[in-house]
Length: 237
Image 1 (cartoon, rainbow, N blue to C red):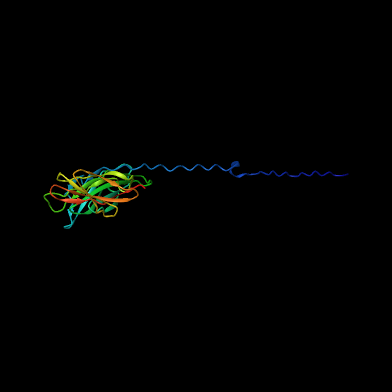
Image 2 (cartoon, one colour; image 1 turned 90 degrees about the horizontal axis):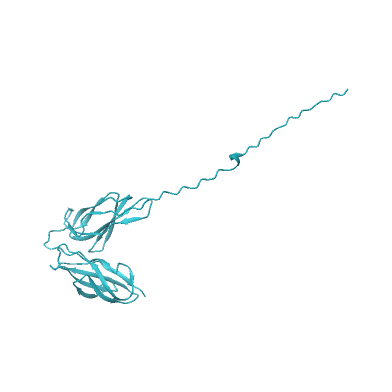
């Protein structure tokens, strides 16, 4: 008799596993950096515009320390004080995160100043108006006028050749009547005298393709005088 053997073959079930549930999750889009608001211009407080500054602390016969003050401006992290010696044309910048800064100045000298507002995270800035003042020196009966400022043509611009009118602004602490001597040349400092005038302008003629340098001597009724910095403009070919 034959015996039949029944073989049972186990069946192996293979389970395939896949990573990530069938696919990678999409990478989220990068979030844009928040926009930094531009700073606003500061309001100037002291020294006062077109006034004599007598509140400085005298440190020597020739120098005193003056504290510049301005109002805080919105969206601003720091400030730059821009200072200009109106008699020599020398400029300087001083940085601070406060709304005041003390600077050592020459006594008996006219200056202009303005404030640039800055914010972290942006290159945008805002500039205040420009104020002028006379830093007090030894007492005098009559002050020299401010050197001429705000020239036209503006510094470094190019204009067409021909007839032009040079213009400028001026002021005097004593309110004296002012007169002017105007110099214009193609070399600096300019020595060619155009003429004299009692107004804040002078008509002249300029040639093409030149660089012109000019300045104004301001004279008050008491005979005091100041000379502006050298202004510059170009003429088109």
